[in-house]
Amino acid sequence: MHGGAYVSSYFPEHWVFFGKLIERTGRTVVIPDYPLAPEHQFEETTEMVYTALVNLINRVGAENVTLIGDSAGGGMAFALSQKLRDDKGVQPSQIILLSPLLDMTKSNPEILKVDKYDPILRR
Image (tube, rainbow, N blue to C red):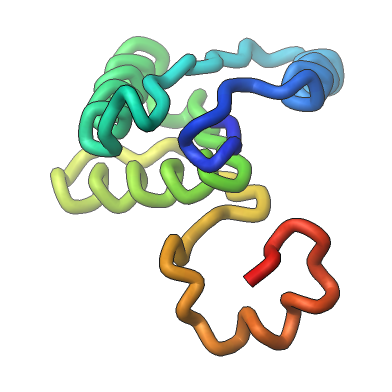
């Protein structure tokens, strides 16, 4: 799942990443085009992706599914894995989070230590 703060769709860099991932692994990549804010609320977005993920797991088996998300998509991937756990669902074989957005409030005091070095964070 892509980043973009839940308001932007896929960037060209995402497509380059997906192409390299397919080329290097020979695997199929399923790319959900999830609903974005402000037109859609978080609950609608996560329900759509959760349903797609469960359907994929049921169709191909959890052992054949790797859930990958970057930035906001990484936060969503983490939230979906927690929902699967809470619903007693089967987890994907792997979950890969690339710079996941895990603290939407940016209230973690450790953020201040890295803020001056991070060109994107801008606390």
